[in-house]
Length: 198
Image (tube, rainbow, N blue to C red; front, top):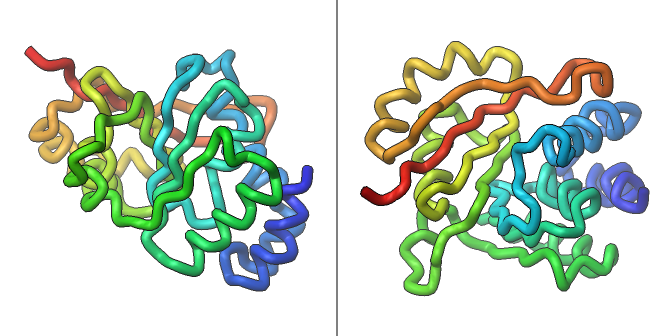
């Protein structure tokens, strides 16, 4: 996959992937993201509009775009260097019809008058869960889903995140495991649904 080559070269040069991660790009990064988007998991609806907050190296957003051509993605990245990297990769991989790169902080994007919300919001290795929920959930339309890739120790963050989740109208905050038998370690995902308007 061309994206793997880009991560192993330009991604390392620009400090988006550590040099020691190169041998594990497939197992630890690409497949770790791809298993979450597998239609068999049922986490991301067909044709969904997805926002990837703090997209950085394009994980999981670009992986999902490459594996799920039915999805439309908005890669949200506030840092100029990373946003430029993402814009270049989107162009090199001819993903311009499917992927938009937006250089903005997630909390500022919600304030834009034309922001209508997305079906799914995701993030990978961005922030502790309580903070992450505060940044991501407001981007969702009512009934939309949070699908955040987290480390295996995320269960310890759930209690702290619960009040923030409740304040934002989140329903069924829970942990799921993806990729059993495909990736090792498996991918731990935090799932939640933004409550529909009453």
